Length: 479
Picture 1: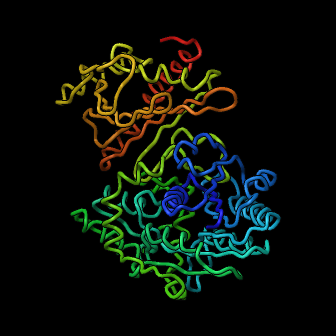
Picture 2: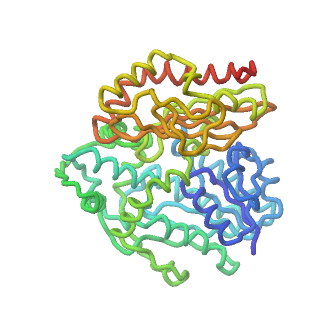
Picture 3: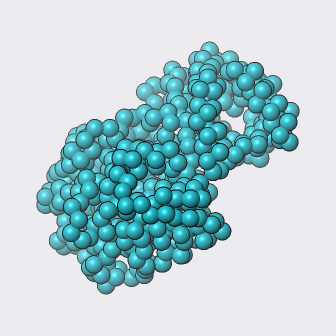
């Protein structure tokens, strides 16, 4: 069994691949900029090492004794020139792999066919594979069409559009032909690359059993969800205007949406069937892939943590208003110079008679409004003032996850135009502890979106003040 390094283990594909490889008994090592945040989510047999693709010395340490390296990162979400960031990161990994005597690099890129000029995003995906091959290390490159799975960027874009818009104005890219592939099939191909015989670099085009336009994907999603949607084609809608619109009604930032839309002009269908001959994998069709994505949506939400995914070229700290799939996120963090157990004490005691540490009057108003709407309000309190248990009620929340000294996640039970969660996590860092606070909202329709954005100023007061008080109480050792 080869010794394997996975880069991008906190991302969508990488996070799921780690689980697949662990289940197969692979000797695994993961590269992470914040090892403590990842170490708690992998098997005890998986090694997590500190490293950064922009720090060559850290890559030499991470690749020592490794046989195969998975390259599953990109910088599209970062500010600045992400093409150059991708070049540098791939060159650093390739050079370090050559110095370490790595047998193979496995890379997942994008599929584009036809004569249309490549978009910047697809150009970067193709160029990254070329840069890795220039290292002299054999590279197995998979070029994938649209990935269908809850949490995948392309699918969540489509899902949000169909769920929230009964009438859709469809620009030209909606009719572009693709070959959507289910996430489970992508993972199967990536894992099977370990079984290929050693040799020269190879490139495989991978797609599902069906060719379909993006409009077809949206219509099939609507059919399975029992939604009636009207789609009107228009000849002109620039990528910039489309991206701004997507930024309002989907989980995609405008700058990321623009990069995606520019790439949707390129057909992505399999023209070389070599993958079907080289691997014992027969990808499922569009209908089944969408069905699986819908059925396993909440499981996928739990498997790939919304608070951990970052662009390889982004800052260490994620933005306060990040997004995961169809969910909107307000994420904040504070560093306290105490150990993790002490930092977690005020988190374990939150709610009930202790209150929510900030803007108590706003919480009471929200509870009163909930009662008027037929909800549970704030009257339930909490069972134990010191330590909750999974399933406990906590005012108008319910404890969904409780890991003493590390993590608390609450699911909202108040009346909302959608679903909501509030999570706290403590991670040792720099001689102290990072306290992460993440509020997550999954809006139901346009009213749900309006609810979130209207309340953004209130969130700033409530969530910002709550985290500051948690940090202050942790430092003071108050109970």
